[in-house]
Length: 280
Image 1 (cartoon, rainbow, N blue to C red):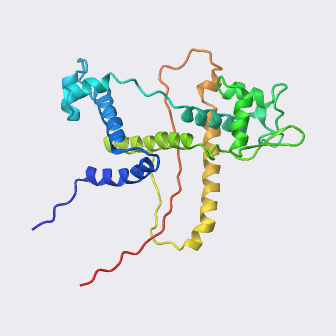
Image 2 (tube, helix red, strand yellow):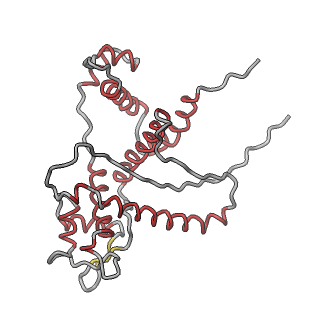
Image 3 (tube, rainbow, N blue to C red):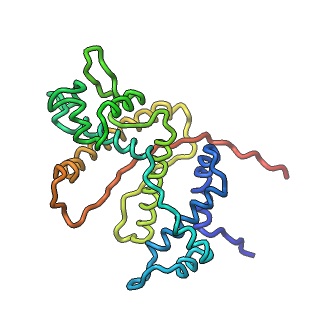
C-alpha cells in the first residue's frame, strides 16, 4: 500500500512556523494572541486581495474564503488597523541616514569614503545629513541612537566618524522584531511571486551544505559577511541614483508607476546532530 505523503503546503507551513513560534514564545505571545492576529490578517487578505472584479467585498464571501463565521469576520473587520510600530520607524530612519552617509558625495572625503562630520555647521554636517535623509526627526536623537548601537563614534575633536556601513540594532528588541516582520515578509512574497509567475521570476537562490566542519566556517562566516556587504553597498549606490525621495527633492511630478525594491542576503548555520540509531 502506497504511503500517503504530506500536503506540500502543510509541510512548508510546519517548517516556516517552527522558528516563528520560537520567537513568539520567547516574547510571551500565546497561541490565543497569535490566532487573533492570524484571523485578522486572513480577513484583510481575503477582503483586499481576493476580490471579484466589479463587485464589492462582502462579509459573506470573506467568511467563505477564510472559514470564519460572518460574525467573526464582521468583528475582525472593525478592529483598528495596526499602525507602523516605533521600532520599524527607528530602524528605517537610522538605516537611511547611514546609507546616505556612505553614498552621498556631499558627505564624502576626497577619496570617496564617508567623511568625518561636525555635528552642526554647514552643508557637510551631521545635522544636514539627517535633515536630508532622516525625516522630520531631531539630529541629536538620531546621533544618540547611532552612538548607542556602535555605528558612530564621537571623536575628541568633536567630529563624528562612521564605524559601520549598515545599521544593525544592538539591543532594541522592538527594532529587531520589526526586521523579522519586514524581511521575512518580503522573502515569502518573493517565493509566492515565483510560484504564481514562473515565466517572470524574481531572483531567489541560496547555496547550502549540511556537513561542513566548524573550523572552516570560522573564517568563511567573516568573509561571507564582508563580501555580501560590499555587494549590497554597490546595489545601494546604484539604486540611490534613482530614488525619487532624493532625486525629486520632494517636488512632483512623480512618475505614474513606482515600485518598492529590496535585495537581501542572509547567512545561517546550525549544529548538525546525528540521530541516535534505533535498536532492532
